[in-house]
Image (cartoon, rainbow, N blue to C red; front, side, top):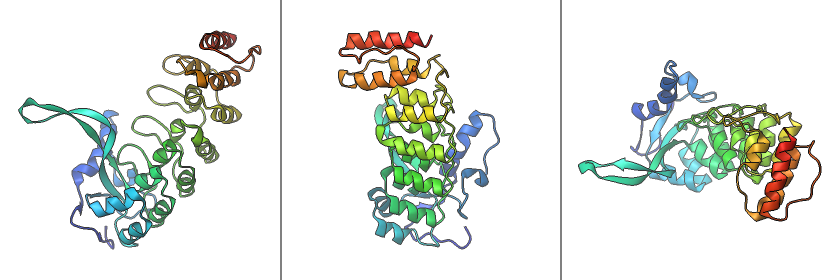
Length: 295
């Protein structure tokens, strides 16, 4: 870290154990050699990651306070920080005397992840211009994964323009395209494909393609987009489901029936035309008809 300083409090300090936590787990599971700093995604940074416990820095990032972010992240300041934050999932934790309690799982994140996932575009741009590693993945996923999952189109565009890898695979086995699960994420999906994402790539465990994901969530525009880019209608996931099966395999509330039916029609263009479903029972019959039409 020659030439750099940390203008934060003593709560910001190197932590080899924390840094190693996110770099070794998956490589050890796969029988691979432990990664080196060159493998950590530091394309534009000249610094190794450091742990940050500074509350002022964290507050500036989580609230999107651009003035404070500029103050803390100057040209000579450390920018690739590892921050331990509270996740969304609960897990059982063992304490002394044999007591167990439900606590929120701790997640490793970074300034880039926080700002990208919350849509703080100006803060994100500032960090990237200060040399933040665009593919840094302390918690097993990159800032691009975060931005796509939150449908932050402008942040996705900015990250890709700074060289973020649209094909990078998270520790959970997902590429960013697999995380475009809401109608608002359609432009994120368009940008990913524009920058080279593979429309037929599969998740590592479920073996879902992006078309499976779009069909399962009833995303009409996504289905149209993926089909235009050559998505496979007959590709099967780990359960043997095609995208059409994925759309039909779950119950849908009445207000979503017509939308899912239109998705099924797109996924089975050779099926005979039939009227839109007006009830749950009729929808089930129509869906079964569409499924059998594909063989």
